[in-house]
Amino acid sequence: MKNKLPIALSNRHIHLSQEDLDKLFGEGYTLKKLKDLSQPGQYACEEKVDAVGPKGTIKGVRILGPVRAETQFEISVSDAFKLGVKTEIRDSGDIDNTPGLKLVGPEGETAMNKGVIVAARHIHMNTEDAKKFDVKDKDRVKIKIEGPRGLTFEEVLVRISDSYALEMHVDVEEGNACGVKNGELVELI
Amino acid sequence: MKNKLPIALSNRHIHLSQEDLDKLFGEGYTLKKLKDLSQPGQYACEEKVDAVGPKGTIKGVRILGPVRAETQFEISVSDAFKLGVKTEIRDSGDIDNTPGLKLVGPEGETAMNKGVIVAARHIHMNTEDAKKFDVKDKDRVKIKIEGPRGLTFEEVLVRISDSYALEMHVDVEEGNACGVKNGELVELI
Image (cartoon, rainbow over the protein chains, first blue to last red):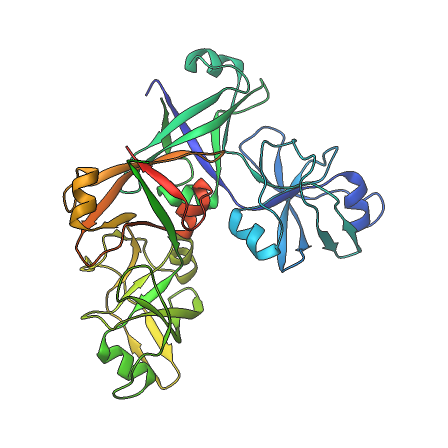
């Protein structure tokens, strides 16, 4: 069990700036919490928005709270194809020179000029976990998955903060490609 | 280049028996070729069918020809979830105790009682290739993918026949999980 940690599959979701939230839901709007996520302080919201790309639209994209400094829309490679935007594999927050698209909410719309990314697979952990796994912030590590769709993920970004709960995040396509379920334990090698 | 081979992404598709083809398109129906596939003798057809599962429907599933002894519907894990059928990772042809569902065509419908699978990732090669790669039929090998979504696929089934063209097949979720494009070269390790 020494090198095991839980994995979770992230569906497409969006983090909004207060400025974009105001444009989409009305001036001074406050997000309504639907449920807490595993990372402390993070939550899924009741609110959803539609994303309109040059080739297609994805309706009902879940908003995650709280609001952030910049709007960031995390999609899958299939979503990028459907929307007609370029696939950019990026670490969260690294959004310079990424595509934008139009967001539509109940009270208005806003044009993101950047921030559409396919999130790089990553692990959240605190400093105690980091000692145990013998890794540093921003290391890239390997994670082994067992089973009939077994594989070893390379290039897994490590993010360390004492506000994090130990968890590996992959998108739905990565999770399905190796047949894991939410909460399953995987191995850092 | 010694251990390299091309990869291709398979979208959901269906192989029909003549009996099911008759039920869906009319007695004695002949499939119309749309385009040849990379495997000799295999082709995409103009015809499509709708697949109706207990939880959802997928419209317009492409039929691949020629007809086979048994109907087999190859889907992704996401498709299995949408349709509401159990995910069964299977080698092509190994369909005992797999789910079925209803197929609807322009002239009628048919109830598959088995044959819905998520195909195990695999490599087609001929006997010359097998010598070069030093593998035997039904071996399970490892394939390494480079790049920002780099990973190593384990449990890759080898299928050898002199009617095969050298190619690795993964489904769309597996392909997107490692960021490969059709025709890209990958490495057997």
